[in-house]
Length: 375
Image (tube, rainbow, N blue to C red; front, side, top):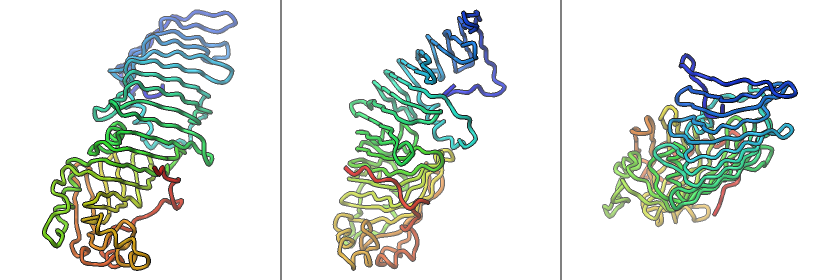
């Protein structure tokens, strides 16, 4: 059952009344599944060939807080599934999407057209979507097309899956990037922001690009440590008076997802007071990270040098790296990483700063991610 499997050795109970149907099929009445936290009540019809023809579940729970009803019917080789719910816990499904299990040896699945509507969809870290709807089409068990809509409070979220370059491409837009990342259990310390994301959902590593505008990072230990260790500007002022709550104008990054591990390159994040470039990875299953990057204080003024043809790239090192910048490294547990800053790199021009490490990074194995959702 999608989103649930009974743990080995854990007690469960399944009961039903079996009635022979006309044509040699069977009808299952008073179906009762009790295998905590899963619970189901309903009826079903099975054809003489052993195929499931119809099912009506008047009550379905896969998680303790679930409250769902499911109806299923067969039209030719396609199953049409309708799910209505007051509350649906999305966490088991999200865990399955990031488990990293190899799909290469799986048997072909069914053709399915799904229509889901739920008043509340619960995600990770206390985040929930309201008034959520999903229409999805599966061919042989593989997702071919989908449309999803929901809201984080007053902030809408929408997602569309369509076929492109022989693989399903997910395009996601959210008016609350922080809530979206917490819902998916990717990152917890971002607040607000407009998110636009493209990612291919093919088997194996999934390449994508993300862009976020007008957001804040709160209580991010790595950010606080980098700002604290970086040499101050010549006038003695720090680049960020309060590194525990910093607003940023924009962020853009290429990334590749392999199960719970997200690797990113060419990441750039900035506001008028500071900027960062970064390459690295986060593993949400192991709760660990490794990031190399460059911190640019007074980004708005400092980065002007990088835009000068010929001499800009030579002195500044890149379009997002200013003349005055420092290299840094973040590694270890995501909740409390170790941060190292190389103060010597602050006085070196861009082409020399590379010698002190950080800021270069690797690209995708295929050279680049898909075209970005520029807005």
